[in-house]
Image (cartoon, rainbow, N blue to C red; front, side, top):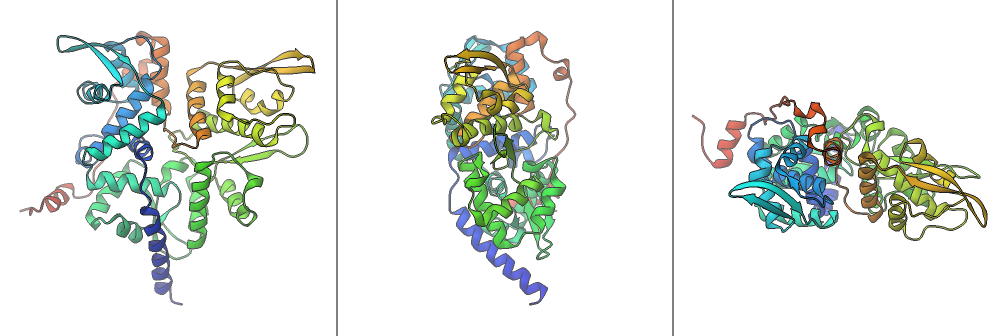
Length: 448
């Protein structure tokens, strides 16, 4: 078969697969989660048409980030501290005050205390994180998002599972070529979209490097060598790992083990190894999450996976009593209410090594044991929040260094936050090629 025929066949298969995928509508929590990811990638974007094309996505993403950052703050937050928090989040305070707070107030999530027209302080009455994501996703849909908004959200959601041929993606998005180019230009410059050529078929393929920052070369080598049926399998496996993060490797269907192992080795599938007291270590496999930190030691998601993996180990491989309610164990761990256990020094060793918990020797009527003590830091608490989302099988909120800085401000006070946050940030202009021409074409005008 000639190369062109292979290419056409590949596109046809991808088109068929995409068609089935896109008929499954994103839920509201997924929409908000992707808004957050895109808005974080656009934090340093200067003024350009992206401010129109992705206005709804950026606005709802920033609203979610602000809401989650001030959640569980029972004392009123003075206006000055709110300014410090938005600075840490890299959200323009004028936008937060004029746009985001009114939205949160409309949703009855904050009480704004004013003196005349000026805001003096706010008090949060926020619901659980999963409800925040669901409600804001509904608002996103009601705000009449642009074609670029919609295409960007759908694309990054699907590409987080597996790459797709460029032509098939355009066809299934149902957008014009110039609209796709604008969407891709923004995504490529902000580093949440990328492209490569399939070694198998020589087809231009779109993917998201955001989920594999720091290991792009190895992951690309893995993806470029996959045939279309293997990419289908990878997409299905990713969906399963999203629904049950921390799947024990031995529970994976034998016919998929080789591709999972290859994915783990190349960094496509994150996996955490937990050693047992006897016998081999066990691996717990996850779907990839957004990687805003290249340094793994600073990656909050990696800490979250460690916490989830240790609890999964207790579910599936505990030597004495298996965990039945994983989220309850996480709550008990964070509040230092876990009972001493002789197996704790084995099960939670990786958390000790990474400064998440410490162990205290204890005695029980059954003999010596270990008490798990939570190390209460903003980093650990943020990782635990993400681990809780993982254990629920919910869409994970992309909280990273900016949200961590906001948490530290709430702990330390407005005058003690990092001086680095007071500095003006250099913006980078993120634009689409020939923006003016494209705008005229969308409006039906002609450039003279």
